[in-house]
Image (cartoon, rainbow, N blue to C red; front, side, top):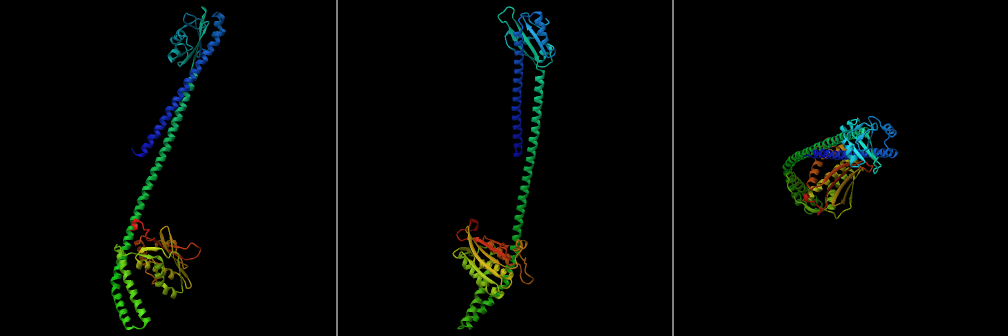
Length: 438
């Protein structure tokens, strides 16, 4: 049986128990009322018996005046059976048995009450003995119909039944409404769960599509860039041999070769990322990554007239990552922040730690970003820059690199009353990665 059926069965059982208890209580009250009515007849019979010393004509007339035809009868028993004060003989088996047994009460059924000329309802008789040890003694019987008491009992029972029916209808109505609302909530929860599953599925499809796009782009770039990089490295080696003895020129040739090699590693690393390959991760100090990113971007900030400041409060915080790829994430965020600032603007790159997570934060006082644009910033080819100023791929690539490190990348407007944007990258501190972070 399903859960709602159990609830309905429980409610009906509870209603049944309450109904039985109420009926039993009503029956008990009814019996008590009839007992009180019988006691009243006995007391009346006793009082009349004490006031009647003999059954002479005067006494019979007084007893006859007590009668209320159709409601109350007075009977006497002087050893010759039952008779009315007028001398009319009557017969009533339950009263005669009670008199013979010296019982104070007798109960008459509907037919027995009707035989005495009373309404066909339950009647009660109170029996009092007069001068029990005297040969002139007699029994005095007051028989009264319990019509009014039974009518009151019927009305009370009717009210009880109506109250029980009303409560049953209300309980079932509210119970049904509650079950209907519960089912509606369950259906809504199921629909929300299905919608959430579809949303997750759509997000996975979008990510797969994005990875496919980035993978195709990375493959094309790797193919097209490999040859020029080889030429650059070769010419840098030739230049290095020709300028031997000139320290400045040798250093320039070395930097060209190093950066060309760096480009090659970044492209190969990103190719491995979109192919799902693990890559080579190292334990690196977060401060070293920050300083590497600063050095790579320093010339752009100097040319743009934008100040770049470091706020490294956790120099000793290590992270487990692919240094070249992860540094490229910070470089991308720093260049975006630089492009968003006017001359004499300011960008701060900070590092902090909380609950085993290391946060790299890039804060600028540039043009800022809206909540709508921040939600789409990681989509491939989405950009807020002027045509020709951006491809819309930097943040998409950075997002994939951060995701590859089981981290998060979020962009949001500044909330300190200053115009600008906050970009935050968060990954686990080395040694505190979860099981699924590997």
